Image (cartoon, rainbow, N blue to C red; front, side, top):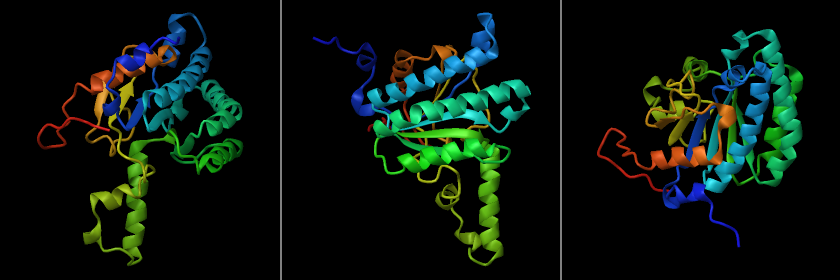
Length: 251
């Protein structure tokens, strides 16, 4: 007889957050503290991504958004960026078929500025292959920055106003959200950041207006299903007010 999953015992199944966003932080520090090159930290981080996707499905999360590579990460040493791009390509080539088989739908947010054509080709392949899947929606924030996203949305709206296609008075928050990279996604209920750092780092600035934050001390390569479940359990203790009276989250 199989034993009950202790991770599931920690949370209330009827109040699992619909959408969880994660800032996967600490790969380099994890490696440095163990005498490994930073590239080993990133490699171990990819393993954590695989485990995180499996855990999200098992815990009942419907939408998972991972901050994979920010538009500011290009400032890192060229060798490290090169290794990160190589890991991304290997991840897609190795895992795409399995994700598709598991009914995972893949979405990628960010821009293609400065990204090699072969990487963009793999990304488009992943999105097209899984577009009709109905299970967990995995959104990967790649070459993404929230301020840039907001500026691009404002530019597209301004262009429509300039062409006479849109009355400025008709612009609403809901309309603006439709021009963001995350159009069609619910706003995150929970944002998790690993490594003990407590900041948002230009990630989903518009979308996280009423998101609950949980910061965990573990580095990303140490992230497990138990840590994921503990963050959800912490989320379930929060009273979400949305500017009004306290409300209990329910699925």
